[in-house]
Length: 318
Image (cartoon, one colour):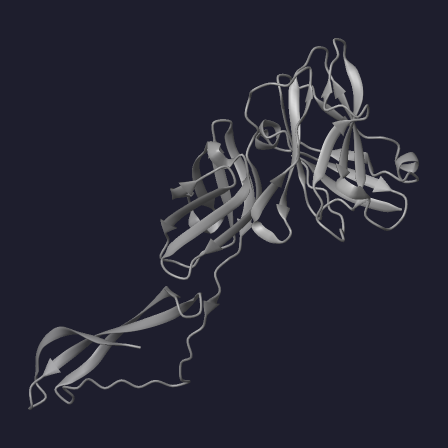
């Protein structure tokens, strides 16, 4: 028995031997389905040449009705079959999930190997129109996105798909944070930002380049970045994408004991000290180093040890 988790926007996790192209069609074999009354239909996601489906893929859909529903079947029945089918559906959990048509479907099939075909049952309202396609990252090139053919119902519609983020990378080796999102239908991205509770407010990123499969944006963030979420804004609303990891802060080595004597001693005696710590990106390692500076206030005295006047004397950086 094999159980699988599936995103709709959909991510289906399998273990493939190769990375085949994917064909999308209805159970009839046609790529378009016509109907006038509410109907229950089966969509087939099939790998070419009977190979296994890729390791991760998403099914995108857009329709003129919000009543498109995935049907969960009886787990005992689907888990005994040769074709992967849905036995449980979760979500949507947020308004962004609803906007992006994103839910999670759990698949099951007999056996322990990845299947070349996955079916799922969909309830469609009467006279609804829409289109669907599968997108996934090329396992041989994580910057390349592969798309299947489109399947439609009642001829489809012209509306754009919601952006699908398949991978996010970041670079913060300097004070500039650079983020790249790889996915499908990203040409409609209007803005990007980084969000984390430690940042107190969202940090807007400046878009540097945008195309259908990649968006690059950056911002000046001169402090270590915590675990953060990249937010993608489109005409359909804000779509939360993947997370980027926190920066690695390298601790500076300091001696167990430290001494300081003013060069003007014995005419200047230390009075008060302040230690200021600052963290800065370290380009050589891609991490962040910690630097401390010491600031002191001393009392100036004349050779006869009689105090003249106080003065501020900055100490050296360490």
